[in-house]
Length: 143
Image 1: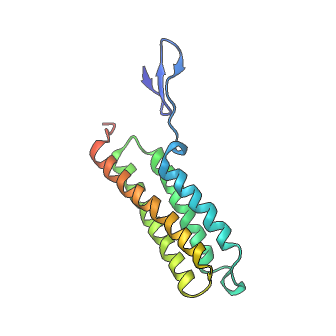
Image 2: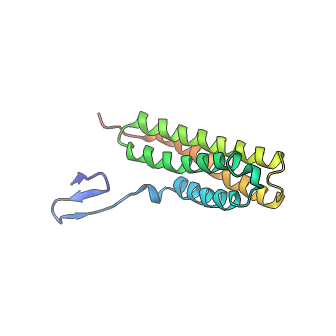
Image 3: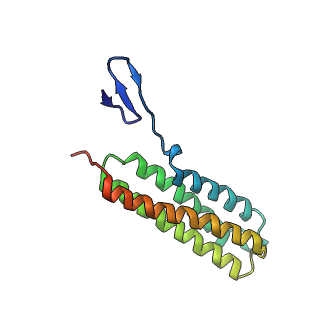
């Protein structure tokens, strides 16, 4: 058996025994959900806000998801993996900050939507933090 990067290749049966993808990570799934919700919210801004804060919130939200993917691609190397997970966590915090700014400046006036998005952003932030701690403790790097 050998690691193919996607799963364990069984040389005797010529089959991949397991295939893990970043798409299977709960943190990626949560980040994807946030990106979709943020994007939908950002499509109905006041005209003056169209290319300012709402564009930034879309970018930072997409950065969370993309950075998880990039880190996952470097998962064989513990320090690289952790570095990108930390970047994803920081982008999640940035997205949260943009959401607060949009709400506090009254560019977003739908309070139930604001609260829903806050909760959706909080969850991947907490999960990323826990995942980073888990990788720090249990990851086996390639030497």
